[in-house]
Image 1 (cartoon, rainbow, N blue to C red):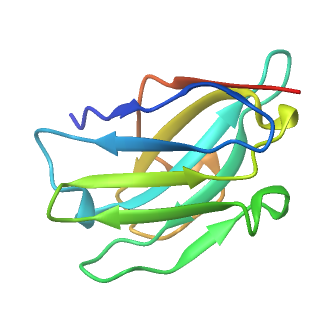
Image 2: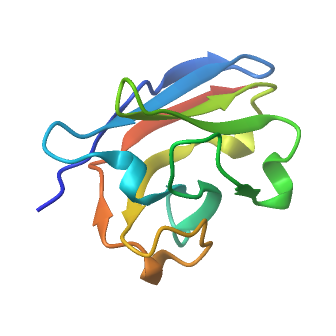
Image 3: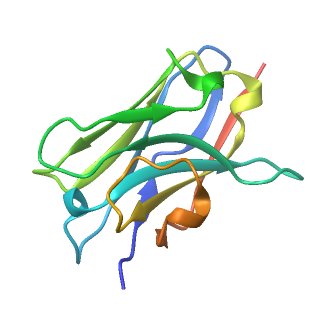
Amino acid sequence: QVQLVDSGGGSVQAGGSLRLSCTCSQHTLRNYGMGWFRQAPGKEREFVAAITWGSGSGSTRYVDSVKGRFTISRDNAKNTVYLQMTGLKPEDTAVYYCAASIRGFATVAAKDYDYWGQGTQVTVSS
């Protein structure tokens, strides 16, 4: 069982920044495609960003609403995947979840991910 731990959420004002982290103590995350999803109250879980498996920087994908503001990256030495969020907007408010896919691709579909973190709350005030 792959247990992901995501962290780094918090409360910021619009225009602020946060960096979310996702790590796993028992498994090497570079073997997995990694993604970030979010779920706002009363809404379905939404894809945010993903990165392919591997030792390099990886290929990435983003939902249009965060392109140019969010960056997903991985530090394999630290076994950690990050989501750097800048220019935050109130509509970014949600619980953010990291996820791992054994397929290794940067997939946008939640059903393609096998393991999930517990979620970290991000609140952006106007």
